[in-house]
Length: 610
Image (cartoon, rainbow, N blue to C red; front, side, top):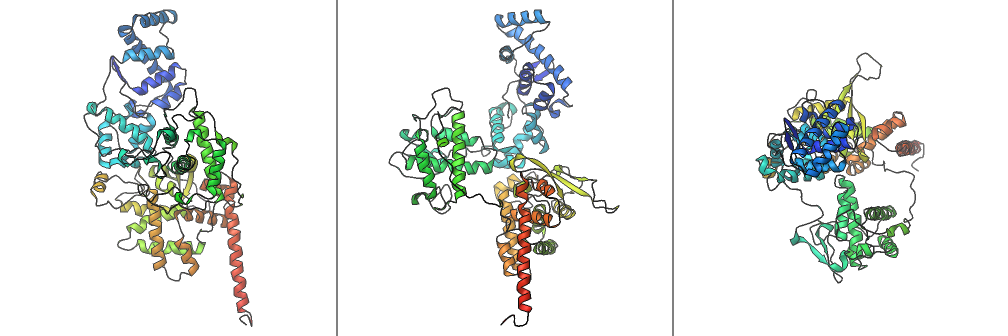
């Protein structure tokens, strides 16, 4: 999180907002080891911040701040500090008196400068992320933002749009002091609020349907006077229902997939509430929620339309009028969770969804659909064909595709994990299978996957070989490189924005949507170029997605008798039951092959064609 310009100079010390936060924790008796981890970075200190050093530093800081307070503070505060020092040998601070001391300390303020390290002004976690991207000072940070434009943060793992927005806000607040300015096009627009000129107001007679970011509500529908509004002090600054909904969604700003899903459900419900029920969200009762549950079974025709841009007048909340039972269940549970949060933050007095039962669904035996997994023989043929394409003169894109497919098919990565995989998280190990003295080195890769859980996956020798070639295409050596995305874009767009974005030559990971396009591009050319493909093979390739290669790994691992708990750990499944579907999939494949074998036998029998 960005820090406000709250620093103090006394003697040789320079105290930043991080130090003040650390001192507050110290006064509240938080362990020194925890404080060191949260508020001190080696980048700032020039050495490791051990618990002993942190405790000594904060005691010295406390003494210097007390001296400043005695010199510049009120007589009441000075008398209190003197009495405390007389009683205990040194002035002891409470949370309240520390705040008073900090206010006095602001009389001696040090300003941020261009050459200051980012570790002086940002939390250690953020500073480490910036350092890993080669950003050491404030002037380097501003330059990086200006070169990359509005999506600058995508090149820095685990910064996210929320942290990026706070960093930009702080840089703009202090750009005069730093001496360099953040370019005007470096901005993160509020995803929930379009420009005033694009907004549409819905009143009690309007039936216009627009996305959440373009929506405005007349006073009667705004929820300003909703009958379910909480009467006590609210925990969020929301004057009406739209503000409350946006506050809830902002809670998921660093989880883009969850954010999209929850936005869709709340957007639909809000539009239904104000255009069909003609009631504010904060005035809905349990019977209203029951009515919406019924509405989900058969949405009104004016709510349904083909997929269109959110900026288009053709946009509609539903793409189909036939929602599955699972989608209806998801909608009800998502809304119940959102209303629970609104109650917890004291925006709403109660949750009407607690009185609504979940839609009835059939509990399906198999969770993921693995029928799109490619058969082992077809998978091997695809790999061989791609190898031949990689050897062509213009084979660099094929070589990128080969890396993507192998990370999925040999290591079981999801597409989000694939684009987030980095060189610094991959390393060789000494573990072999023990069959010979010259075992091939086994590599391991640490990734952060679904539910924000970290796991380690093996990387096959074939993948390492493919990565080495891909990195040579980038002008780098995989073994000597220390950091960077494992899979990176090779071509710089010819647009002005693209040229500016890639100006410093830093490697950028693919976006997840680009992985989809990459696989679709490859499948088309495999169908057109591979010889002797059956109709069934072509059908499989047409429907192949990046996730299909993860299923390839699961089914092949089970076929080769890899223990199920090991497959579970590699794939990152929360439950062994989920992994067991690959056993069922292999059994089904065996039965299909047996049925085909029996048909051939019958055809070969005398009179079999009669």
